[in-house]
Length: 176
Image 1 (cartoon, rainbow, N blue to C red):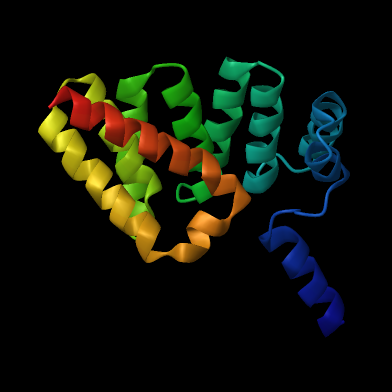
Image 2 (spheres, rainbow, N blue to C red):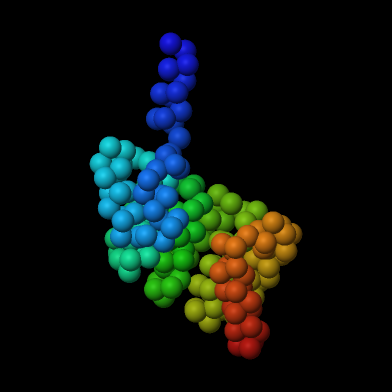
């Protein structure tokens, strides 16, 4: 009985990282993943990881507003979920929604001051506002956070952010 209760506790406490939809997403089959995750969400619409993954499916299918909706739902269930925050930051950055990007970056810095994501996004916001000195200060902090954690730079998923960092740093220096 204790084992059964423990298993039920685990099932209802932690998000389902081993879903069929997620495996389809990882294979790049976004349409199929969208369909599978939609069905999974009918049974568990509070699973912040699944909501975030649904947002990622939508984003990869070009459904930007729907992706935003799912990222926000994920954050409603877990406000400090770094993957949903980072995905939302990317969405806002790539759609030139800099005020929204700034809000998300403040949350990233609040919850994860040791990570570079929030500082990098904030630097983009300040750069677009033509506040080059402040932008340079933020990009410098982002660079320090990146270089202080070599594990981050070696991860495939962070190459995107590293390239953004280098590009922004060049633009800020050229604008000063």
